[in-house]
Amino acid sequence: MPFSPLRLLLFILALAFLVVLVQIGLITIAFDKLGLSKESAYLLLLCTLAGSLINLPLFSLKTDSEIPPRIPAAILRLPFFKLPPATDRVMIFVNIGGAVVPAAFSLYLIAHNALHPLQVATAVAVVAFIANKISGPIPGAGIGMPMLIAPFAAALIATLIDPQQRAPLAYIGGTLGVLIGADLLRLNDIRKLGGPFAAIGGAGTFDGVYVTGLLAVLLA
Image 1 (cartoon, rainbow, N blue to C red):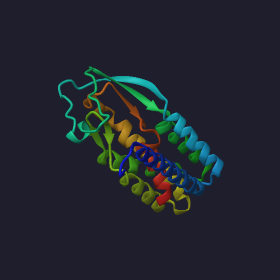
Image 2 (image 1 turned 90 degrees about the vertical axis):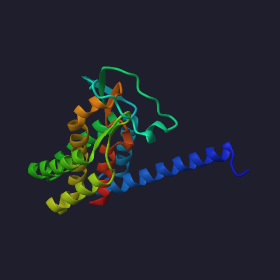
Image 3 (image 1 turned 135 degrees about the vertical axis):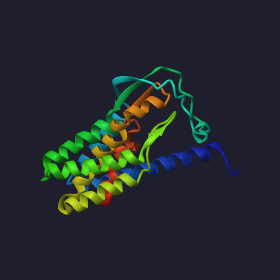
């Protein structure tokens, strides 16, 4: 038969296995440039994967009830998409794997590398500005942005500021820059999303904070 559930299952399993291998390989290369051992890179990945299952509540915001959410037709056609229930408040969470772990590792790099505070502040500010300008609310989904612009910006600014320390500077600038520019500075836009909750770094290993830091190091 040209198609069968078994073949589909095998294809999905093979694809998932390939994604895991690629991600582990990229993480090993990226964190090797940061001076971490393979064991430390795996531990960081494990913390990210486990932490992606944990969302800690922070506070709630009153939604903008005057502007009903306009959900794009492409999102409405997704097989597992459900319209969020009507509510006048949105609960803000922080995801451990997608936000806390990358931010904590950025602080570790700041403490263990010869980086001037002004260099760090400049890299973070530039990426935060760019991330804020290219990101935007997607009603019913969250805050979205193009995936590659912020990592390229982080790698470029890190190379220009300090070529010798460009790998840790790219990770710090990319991670904290996206966290500030696309998440924290976009909290007010969450009022217009129409959902009952939103998570900072909520996509875990596929969130913009995590992905930007990883790609920025690879590009630096």
